[in-house]
Image 1 (cartoon, rainbow over the protein chains, first blue to last red):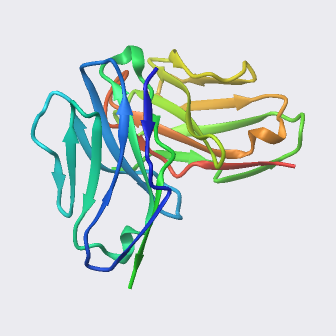
Image 2 (spheres, rainbow over the protein chains, first blue to last red):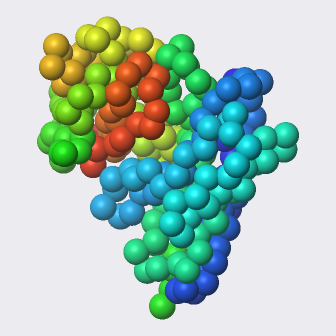
Amino acid sequence: AQTVTQSQPEMSVQEAETVTLSCTYDTSESNYYLFWYKQPPSRQMILVIRQEAYKQQNATENRFSVNFQKAAKSFSLKISDSQLGDTAMYFCAFISEGGSQGNLIFGKGTKLSVKP
Amino acid sequence: KAGVTQTPRYLIKTRGQQVTLSCSPISGHRSVSWYQQTPGQGLQFLFEYFSETQRNKGNFPGRFSGRQFSNSRSEMNVSTLELGDSALYLCASSLAWGGQPQHFGDGTRLSIL
C-alpha cells in the first residue's frame, strides 16, 4: 500500500526567508503524480504544485519549487521569500497514474507559520 | 470559471440521523471525488464518481454512499450518523476518471451532537 509521510508537524519561518517542507512516500508503482496542497484557515484545499514521476526536472511555480528525488522517494517543497499569506497547513499527496487508483493519498500535513 | 461548489457549508445533526451533502464540479469536469478530513485520521478518500458510476471506493462502512447525476453534480449521503462522523467533507473534481490535478471545494463541516 502506498503511504505518504510528512515528518514535520509544525514549522515557522520569518517573512521573506526560505523554508523547506519534507515529504517521503512509499510505492511500488513506477508512474505516479505528487502534489503539494495548501489549506489555509479558510479550509479550501489549494493546489500549490504538481510533479509527474516520469519527469526528471523539478517543478516550479513562482516562489514554490520542489526537490524530487525518485530513487529516494522524497518530494520536498521549498518556499522562497515567504509571505504572511503562506501561513497554512501544507499537505503532500500521491496518486498512481490511471483511473484504477483514482484517489489521492495524503500525508498528515505540516502547519507552517510565517512570522512578520 | 466557477470553482467547485459545496453546499451546505455547515451542518449540525444528531446521532442516528442521516445527511446529504452536495457538490457541483468545475464546469466541464466529469469526475468527482469525496474525502473526509478529521484531526485524528487526516484526509481519507471516500469514493470517486465518473459518468454517474462509482469508480473507486475507500475503506468506509456502507453507511457512506454517493451518487452522481448526468450533469456531473454529486451527492454523498451518510445514514445513521455517529459521533465519529463529525468531520470536514471535501469534494474535488477533475476532467476525467483518475484525472489530475483534482480541484477542491471549500468543504462541508458536519458536526454530530
